[in-house]
Length: 303
Ligand SMILES: Nc1ncnc2c1ncn2[C@@H]1O[C@H](COP(=O)(O)OP(=O)(O)OP(=O)(O)O)[C@@H](O)[C@H]1O
Image (cartoon, rainbow, N blue to C red; front, side):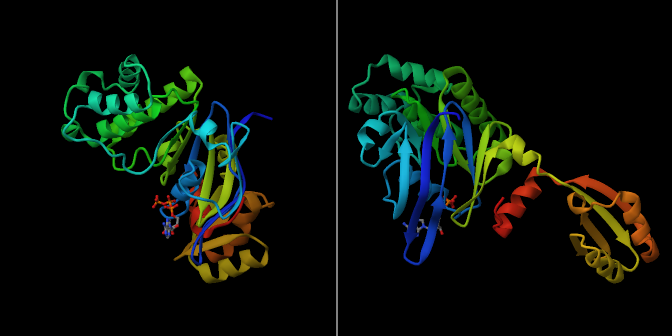
């Protein structure tokens, strides 16, 4: 069993009638990049704020580094760097000066500023005013600030939101090097699977406050079943026949999609069954991860 850096049990938060986070059991293993995914409003920020002690939980427990939150928040949060929602800066000051203010507050040596600027590749822009930075640069400055104390856990809420593809790529490289070269554990949220699927080791998918999937990305990949698609001349009757045979079928116009994982019958049999309804076209394809994600979050089904 890998060591868990973050472990929540039954974590719940309500806002009035709305249960924003509903009995979430998060497990973030040490040294991994954990992609926390879900559509807007699913409960990612609320969960993250509870981890950081910025919001109180209504029920459930949070353990980080093996200690209970919020009782040991001082001890715990010393080891955590975070970037939640839009970070605030002094636009009229340089990137360096902004970090200097923070490092003075944290009583850190000045050399640390140079180190984190180097890590986020802002060294050459360190003496420019932040008001002239691009969104991606501002985001990297926020990450530099989160790194100042040399955290063991980095929590980033939608760090690539609003960035262009190049900016997204920069952040991805940065995450990979922090996790792999420095052994940092990273929890990052996103509403787009495509933003984390190339870098995350583990993912958690939250939908309407509930964690609907958690585990290695490869395991999710394996759930990508095959789908057989048939265009037929008489789809109504063909659909009825397939449903009667116990197939899982979806119909769009004259196109029938049959879930192959449920088809114990060989493909040839399926052709024989559909033959009388006039097969015009047939093809097989695998569900994309994106389709699986949409299914999970759209229908709120639990894996
Ligand atoms: N302070 C609050 N008061 C009332 N409702 C809130 C508050 N904060 C969050 N919510 C509600 O809780 C739900 C979850 O919000 P949350 O911000 O955690 O979602 P999210 O997954 O982070 O989405 P986004 O990416 O849009 O921020 C939403 O329906 C939101 O409207």
